[in-house]
Image (cartoon, rainbow, N blue to C red; front, side, top):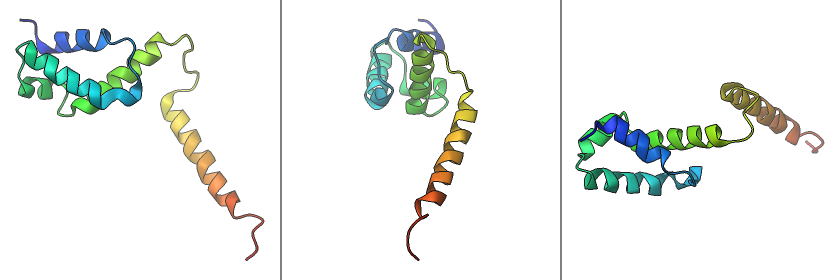
Length: 100
């Protein structure tokens, strides 16, 4: 039997038509597949650093980005910072023009 890390990587990479919002059902299918292949839930938990849903979500997002024809121009951390700045500016302006 292969080590679970290799099996897990292959299992994720075989799911090509998965949406990021399908993570919970994908995690459930992954658990069932791991058990069917003879891996324990404890081994799966250890391989996913204790959070299978998060592990699958990150793998799916990584896979979607890798398969995309358009690479992100701005690093994700800067995109989040820019979004937070824009949304906080919008909140400050939302009250403008209202009578006090």
